[in-house]
Image (cartoon, rainbow, N blue to C red):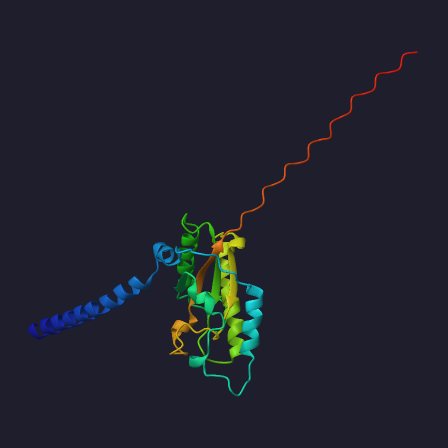
Length: 226
């Protein structure tokens, strides 16, 4: 009986040790969950509107990804394709996608929801945003651009269709591996993050023109007397 009790105590001690070891991991995981305020703090720094031709940037990224020049620098030495984006208020989000697809995994919907909460907060409601997709430097560059664009589009679609963010406030572009977030480590997971950039104020809609007043009826001519 004594030996059985000792074994039981030892098992309980091991279990307690495992629980204690697991607690910091759980705490660390909890600390990585973003809040609405985290997003607001990062984005609420508007200074001047950025002039970004999104369709032109998409084409430029795709063309550079097809470069086959012998003098092409390695990913770690490649200059950013749109350096002006680095000057905009930005929030970098770790959004998990299914492998090689634009399908957002269920665990990341909470992250997208917190972003939506921030974008509808009074401090950010007057602004427009650019969703930027990135991909780590693996595989074909051109394929990475296409996938990053599809992922940026997917985030925009979720924000618009699921969380009802006004479409006019959101644009999307995929930069592939043409503007790595961590150039020193081209294959690092950090380079798969999605960025939300504050771009400009929402354009004022022209006032609605009032309906033209009905033409005044001319007074009827008096009947001629015979």
